[in-house]
Amino acid sequence: MATNHLPFVPPLLLLLLLLLLLALSTSASNFTSIDCGASDSYKDENGTAWETDESYISNGENRVVQNPDSVPEPMRTLRVFSSRKKNCYPVSVPGGGRVLVRASFYYGNYDKNSSPPTFALQFDANSWETVVTSMDQVVSHEAIYDVFAEGTAVCVAQLEQGQLPFVSAIEVRTLETDMYEGLDSSFALLLKGRLAFGAPGVVRYPSDAYDRIWDPVAASDGLITTKSDTTVMDPTTVKDNPPADVLLHAITTANVSTDVVLFLSELLPTDPVPAYINLYFAEMIHLGSNATNSFQVYVDDDRVIDAVNPPYQTVAEYLIMRKAASASTKITLTTTPEATLPPLISAMEVFVARGGLSNGTDASDVGALIVLQEKFEVLGDWTGDPCLPAPYTVEWVGCSSDPTPRITALYLSGYGLSGDLPDFSALTALQTIDMSNNSITGRIPEFLGKLPDLKELNLADNKLSGAIPSSLTENNNIKLTICGNPSLSSSDQKPCDSSMGKPSTPRATKSSSTSLKESRRNLVVVLVAVISLFLVVLMT
Image (cartoon, rainbow, N blue to C red; front, side, top):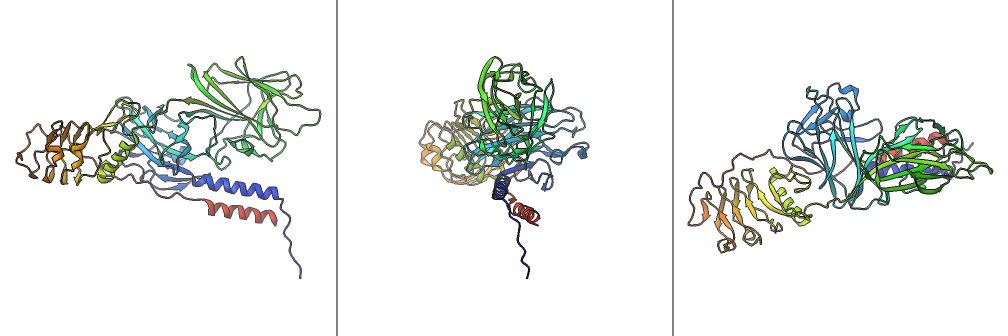
């Protein structure tokens, strides 16, 4: 009987396939892709799973752009906001860590007004960018930063009357903790350009396991494009792990005596900003014994790298950090005296480093506020930091002006609250509580009279019952208003005056829930099948 022997598969190839499987499965499980305004979930042509935004937010209206077939699917719908100071998408990031967050906006004349708006973009407690939308172009902003809790929030806020903020898509990708290691946790990197020199097209997932988007740049200004003489490339030798597809091309010059000059005029603003720049170099040919590729790197007139010797079939990465760079800044690659080949570069990332990030409102205050939101579902749709960035505080809270703000007031008159009051005694900086004109039941909690800074407590026009706690009756520092609660055991139960306990404008809002989905689609099973099929084809 004849025996069929499978052909030998090189161990290196098997290792690369297993690494690819691991990278793809890990990254896919750490992706959150939200198609704002969409009615159904789907997978795009890259295999990325997109979900609707229904489990993230309920405020706002879903709209469809004009000529939706002319743009990628995530840009065909959007959610627009006509109410609240800011509207936020909370995204779960289990374990926290370093994330890449991308927010995209496509106006597409959805309102038929031919008036693309300008508005503010924020993450967590921090300002991010001013979004200037376009009639027919997708506008995207990307940031890399550290998440200290179990999630992050992406918010939009109105800047000018009549210019309504909207969101088309939000993408969150978890990075390795040692990626972009020059980034301090008090900084964020705001992307200005991620360039693949000489690449034939855009490179992103699945070529880039972290779904970074690398834009192709053609050679110009006397430069030429060169292509690697191999398809084998190992980018894992550097921590930022650029995709192999951006390292198989480069731009260079025709001779050793000509420099490669990279202008940042289209990437950085006119005024100087702190810059974080990654440069990636890979040799395109296997060098003979008499060939040498060595060059220096200058930023304007400052030599920042003494000698780059691009490796073959792998990559060298260099970080340039400048306290002040601008549109007039240029990067020059010039050969060393011993070089026999001209300088070259494969890829570059340019960021503005945004310092002074805030960790947000006092953590104990935020926790206590969550207790209120979990008890009163009507409050649940207000997400993001309650106090920052100023002046975009949540409408029903007051905050101190401290670097780490404290919550000093609750303005919840007429919000449709019903049920017993939960224990929010951790809000120890409260000075004012107005919960009048609701349907709050049960007893008045003892802890309210023990809040150290409380000056005013308005519980008028509710359905409270029982005795008033001694912590309140014996506290002369608190102005207590309890009229309109006929079931309270008090000798002073008169109807409220028309000016007492009545909000000037009804504040009831629609009920909503902001619970996040507890699971994400995992592509491991699909990827195992794909890799297995590849191996079967290879060995037949």
